[in-house]
Image (cartoon, rainbow, N blue to C red):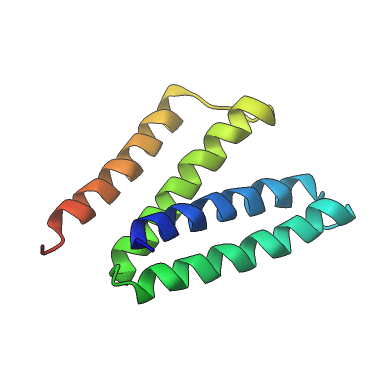
Length: 108
């Protein structure tokens, strides 16, 4: 399986885990708490497989972290009533731009 498909799966799992962490209310709700544990185990497993398939650790972690931050921020704003303003959107764009530059700078 492609390293990029694996990293995409790791991102989805990490986002599910992070949103579930919010929904678990400090691990006081059972179902979201179980989802947190399963999602993070899955995320780290898939991240590890992406690294084993040749994706450099710096690039993989940058992609995983930046995409996770951006998606969680957007989900928080869209579904959890969390604030989002122009400054925050610019910050997310800069983080994503940084990851793109890391990927572009990687030797072929």
